[in-house]
Length: 322
Image (cartoon, rainbow, N blue to C red; front, side, top):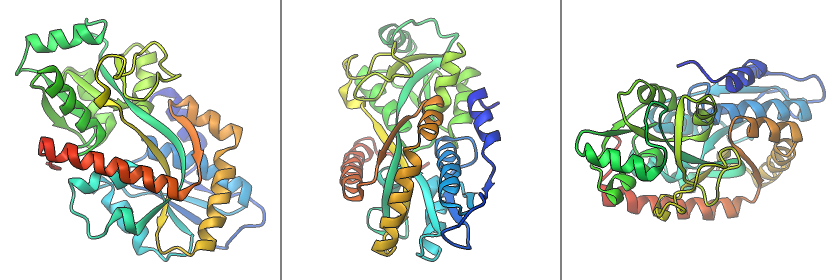
């Protein structure tokens, strides 16, 4: 699937290796590991914030995409690198709070990894192809129920919010939707557009441009309030499904063994770079909600709460990575 114009333009303007003249923090480049392929939410955030970090610190920034195993490969790469502040991971909260419940890991993400700062927030949106005639959620559910046992939902990966939300909706609405998991949003959305699946809870970055282009129809948003990017789309709570409220963060993650003074220096630099108006605008343009939080303890509490909630969902629906 071709990348939406706004994302393609952003990628073109952010080189994989960014080196800005000036007095650098270190002679070695700052490596930002992205546990996903180019073009997704974590990759876009890494490139936008990495470019600003390079500009402000004078240090070269290298984007290192390490997709695979639900983010496990990227996290392992981070933990295997020296804990000197020269290697960080740009990841979403699902790496720490969702994936570990369905993929066995040789480490404890909640103990061995530390969120240095959140940079943006995002929920998921329930979408169908624009050819779907239902105009609102009530009509959509009625149509799916009329074909009970013959309908399906896509997710951008088993064991993620995209998967959880589809299962919960199917259960609550009595739909008997069949799950079809994909390796990322682009192939899942392509299947949705092609009619191979009926609905999907997708990330905002990939869906918003297609909704605006009239290729996808949006029915519900998972955030606590309506998204400013889709103000016409009601929240799941408004529609009577408060248990479908999901909203995670994307940010910089470090190994827990990183020295305290190094963490503090990085948090200050990241907070300044992420708060730059140009960065905020670029993240907003692709459907994210810029939100900078450098309180590691608060992020850890929030992530642990997410993890506990997700553990209950995984147990109830017997979710596996397969």
